[in-house]
Amino acid sequence: MPYQTLHIIIPENRNIQDITKFTPEENYLILKIGSECIIESRKQIIGLTQEEIYNKVRQDTKDEITKLELDIMMEKETAKRMEEKTQYMYELQIDKLKKTIENQQDQIKSYELENKNIIQVEVNREREKCNTIIEEKERQNQINRELFDKAIKVSQLSITDKGVKGELKFNDIASTFKDFNKFYIEDKHAQSGQGDFHLHFDKFIVLADAKNYSNKVDKTQRDKIKKDLLKNEHISFGWLVSLNTNIDKFDKDPIMFEWINTNQCIIYINNLLSYENPEKILRLSYTISTQLHILINSSESVDIEINYLKESNARIVDKVKNMKTTIREINTGINIMKRQVENLQIEITDLLEIESKDTINTGFSFIDDWWKTNIIESKEENKILSSEIWQKFKQDNKDVLKDLEISADSFKDYIKTKVPSEYRNIKSKKGAIELINMKLKENNIIIKP
Picture 1 (tube, rainbow, N blue to C red):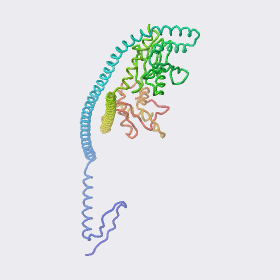
Picture 2: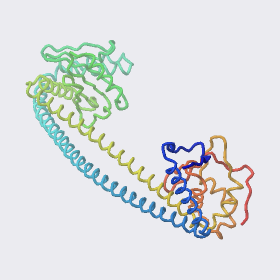
Picture 3: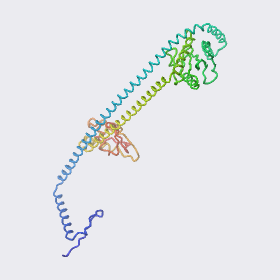
């Protein structure tokens, strides 16, 4: 059978299978069937009217939009359920942590009350002992004190320096201990970091610092005696003696004390010269120091128990701090998830607004005219807020806004349809929109409707 040759042209960027493998009859069928299909399709397209084509395209688009809206609603509902579930889970964890923290705080308070009560009972007991001892000693040393007072008063007549007078007054009163075994006073006021006097008793040494102030002894002097006492590790007690005034923060009682470590303690003596017998107050300070010295050198079991309580309290405080840190991290995670949900809701709202342009307020045509003549694109990096544009629009069209019923919200809706999403940044659901690479014309034109 004779054959005929056909010259067929196809686009350069299109590829087809190698047809050289087919027989001439198969090539004939391929061309015949393909050409008949194309001719029939063209006839059907020609038979459709312009209105039918429009309706068909519109129906297809409507079906796709309906499907997209259903998908968005499902995603929104899923996100809402996930948020509720996550929030419920975090609330359970937070409640559990709060209960744990409350239990730990109750334990800490109970430990503090127990320790405070124990110390107060011991102090009261020692005070009673001290009062008895002081009364006995006072009767024995009354004559010696009177003689010593007279000698000091004579020597003070030639002294004018206020600080030296204060030191001499304290030295005078401290002579009440001269009948104590192995007691002597060492003057240290000329040596830096040693206080005014060192009172040497049989079992311990006291670093004494006397203040002859007209106002309260402040924190600076308290810190100074602490620093001096820490420098002298072999001395167990420091006496900060205010002769005429009280000591700030430690003036509730005539004598108060403060531990600076497990082996050293500060005794605060308030307004010593205001008492009829200041020597009695000084002797009471010695008695308290004696009992505290016994406490320092008490059995190891007491120290072990105190150290255990301190370590236990420290561990509890660390646990509470860790729980607070965890709660802050949980709250941060919750806030991040809330912001993500808000951003998702904003995007869904924008998507629905874009898909429903045909229902936009008719006043947008007037805004569009104003926009075209007053807003331009900026080649330089520039940002402007929708609130700024709205204020300018109101200023230009304040006489006609009532008739057109254009509000700030509808103006933002117009911007969302006018400006592509890549050129706008929505700060929050109800906040202003930030427009990128856009600006107002300097000589703007007012459009009248």
